[in-house]
Length: 298
Length: 272
Image (cartoon, rainbow over all chains, first blue to last red; front, side, top):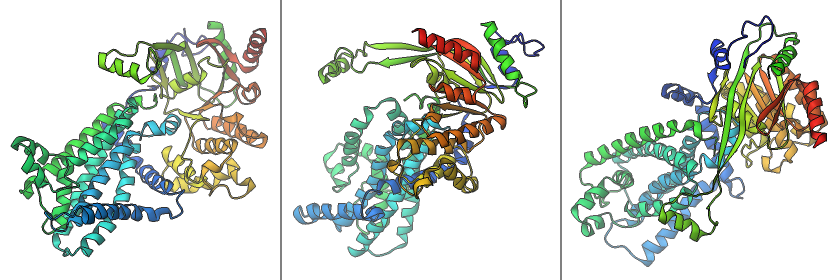
């Protein structure tokens, strides 16, 4: 079963022995976690370029181009202001429009990241089957793209907050660590749903409903105190640990003076936010890494 | 079978620049089996799918396609190997297994370094310009930004997409299929690969490009790599490869000098 050429030192070896003799590796051997992380770091420029390319490509057919990065959240805010601010006038929450937009934009960051994450692998099979690169680059690029989108939304949000008469305070600085924690959380979430979406194409159809339910459970459109008023105690405690509710509340606490909050203890809020970032970030990464060899199968 | 291996060894020994023969790809009794889920078994209607979910039965119609059945061979540094065979004989599947993109079910594939597969369906981002795709593709192959800057003009030049005006700055969706394939080949061929697997890519370009790419494949090979070429165009196999492997329904039929194998293959194809 081997090479039988005359005077060949390798003759008589089986294929496996021959491979071992010259130090060949098994083709589909999964990389170790350290090796994988190192490779991923080496690909950071690819992630950044790919994310930026995706952002540009998403506006490439629109006449107004990248202006939509700001126009989309602005239009969104206008529609919600029309309905919740003028038609269904809210009295219970001071500065409702700023309260609403904060929740909306912060939630949207995670929502679109999760939505696009489900197709991060399945939508890029051509690239995956053609080139070898750490596949985690793709869901991470989705997170980076959404982060860039968020920056556009934040410009709009800050304008709205200022126009509605909120003062600029030092508390605003807390928005930075809050969003960074959320970004880590999103990265983990995106990697997790990317692996699930690679195996199960049906996830893409289910995702909108999951995200809708999540939005209602995060107190985006109404006062978070409604949870306390209408739910039994244990369920309210549960809602308090909803990561999205926590990230939204952190942003509201940072930007708004009198926003109603469900978690009255600020240290607890930060603790839960950090906890979720670590659990989701590390967990999502490990989960994605373990599936690394399967992604080409589609 | 032993005879075939001897033949293959003779072919590689005649290569002048290779003294010690160092194996780069060792395929040991590789089997690849596709499991094909035939969608919703027992009818594709939503009702049938729902019934399966409710009754928790899995789709009964899982067919197994045994695409590669126990193939073994050794490829050496500096070789260019053609893979021929009729449609569905397992050529592309074997390439994917060598590239590590499709795990083998039995047996093993050993490789030196990371083989790169270059196929015609290796789509990049169609909404982006050719230039940006070059940057992305190079970064995806692991080049540093500085290397990309250095290589990019050469890649566009090689692909020849700018021969009819400035196409490099237009989105790739405006390219003809031949232009896109040329650009993809140029990107993949820009890097020195230990093992380069080419799937029908050379067939798409026009005559001038085919000449250039065949030259490039030769250069890559001299850069101490191994090149596999899957093609139905026997002429391009004859021009680039001195060794050829003939697969027929997943079984290795013949492995030896290109002329001999192609002669046997043509006799077989004509007889059918």
